[in-house]
Image 1: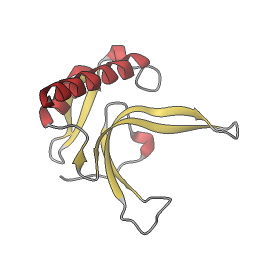
Image 2 (image 1 turned 135 degrees about the vertical axis):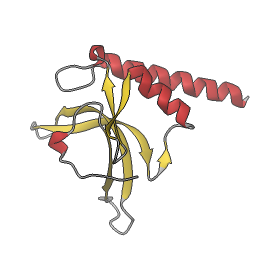
Image 3 (image 1 turned 90 degrees about the vertical axis):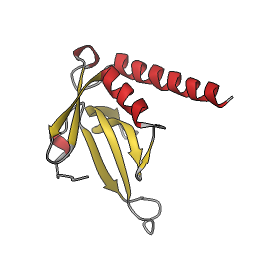
Image 4 (image 1 turned 180 degrees about the horizontal axis):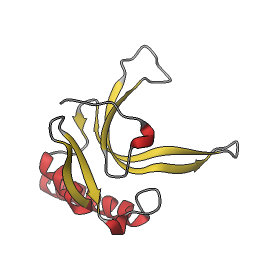
Length: 133
């Protein structure tokens, strides 16, 4: 899938982004690729030092080309439940989820969205477990 570069400051809630990062613990390992749905583009976190930093907060969709979800329908259902999936760039196959306004706060996702996602993931997990029995 084609990729285009971006700046972390340009990301918005609903963007689906892939990035590579090198392990801080073991530099000899290959960098891992991760794909996330951005939920908060400025997630505020207070550090032990007392300093406040801002981070990207998102829902992991894929790690090292391994989908977090068992099938594409499950992923599509989750994304459709929280918003409208559209192309940001059809040519480059870049998608965005227009998150429903009731789930968006000042910097991104509200607690309501996080609870909704957790509920949907729990229901899907429960269904999979029941089917396995």
